[in-house]
Length: 275
Image 1 (cartoon, rainbow, N blue to C red):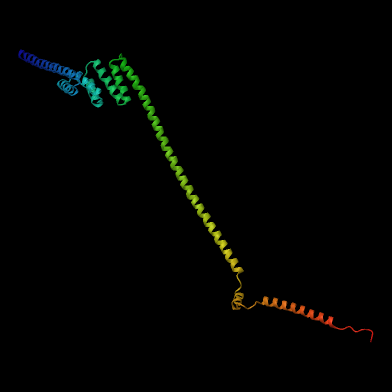
Image 2: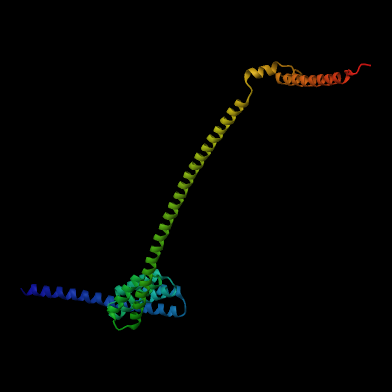
């Protein structure tokens, strides 16, 4: 019985020693990580961004309990307008942070990245999360109000753009409809013009037939034409002969009258007295 108790005691002591060693190792790693973070800060103050980035990455890899290293590296990326990398490091800092002040700073800067990206809805949520860890920070509260205002304007612009797009689509449909109506009216007009032209052609043909009939009506009869064709060029017509005969008769009548007048004048008148 005593041996069993002793074994449990020894086992417990061994486990406790292991835990102590693990804790000590973590503490050592954290100290080294902080030292590397300090080196990175020093490099950054002299504008040696690449050297500072290397030191910060070493610090991050050395200990997962160091929230300062990713936070500082995020600030370095942010100042260089590398917002995607900055957001990743701020997010990492927020996950590593065990104290509310550190979490507040990480979420606050995440909100700043979202503002730069014009992702206002995400910025609002990040600032809210920051205020949950530090409700008294006036800068975060101001940024939250600004993000809400920008989100409102952005939604209004989206609605306006949507309305404009719908209006443009409606105008295009109306233009297409007007074009179809114009084309239809043009087809109808062409058909109407074609009908008018056809009618006009029919009337012209009708007038042509009338003129042809009139011409045929005024055309000499076939017998008269044949008689005219048989007559010699210097041969007089019947009417001309008749007129000529009548003229001759009149002339002959005049001559006869003159002769008769002379006869009357030439006859001697007998005296009543006989000498």
